[in-house]
Length: 83
Image (cartoon, rainbow, N blue to C red):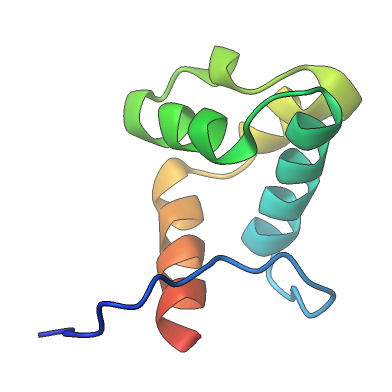
């Protein structure tokens, strides 16, 4: 079992290689630029499946619908565990 109690952070950086990772970065940036809390909005979308959690700004909503939610979760978990 994972016992590390330190806070880990999903880092948005230049080394994103997967389509899901690139999509998450684009959506994150659009939400941030639109004045939203990107983490809360992305979590809301992942939990509910409701794309209205994601802004239309910069086409973010249509981007997020291109990839299945389980693929996005997989990308987040892989990134989290690799740090």
